[in-house]
Image 1: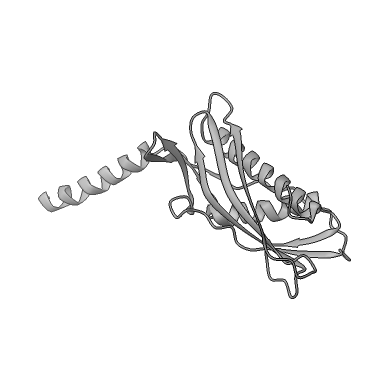
Image 2: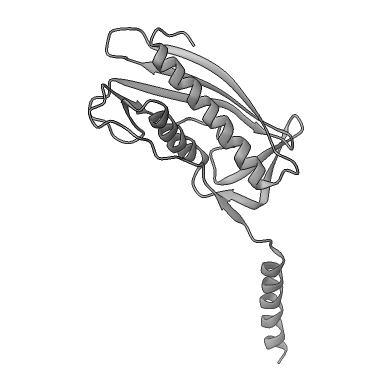
Length: 191
């Protein structure tokens, strides 16, 4: 009888722990379908976006002060953040440049490649700040790779929460996409 009680206590404690965890929402970076001309003049290969290791996770991470980060207990990404940002950027670029075939997958002989490195993607209760460098490699001629840098700040809608954080981050990625498309259209390396 004493053994049966000892077995029941851990099971009861485990069930109580499961009941006290809040439901967790799962988010992805939004994408809108792009309208691409099948015979695009330019094929653009977007390399996988590089993020700092502490962000390249399925955890939804926000900044707490200068040195701290907090992992949401109620929300997470449905894929690694680097994959979600890459996918969203490719879709956004395809939408912004309809005469260009944009891919984040295999491309046999792309006309140009884009390498994006995110150095910061910090979200607080009020703002989301994305700092990124992108390099355009090859544009159909022998020009040297062109490097650009941008900082994109968006507001987290009150009262905040996971959904507002995700929306602010998605808006920052959209702004990055807009700037990359502008540099591609300029074609001369100037933003």
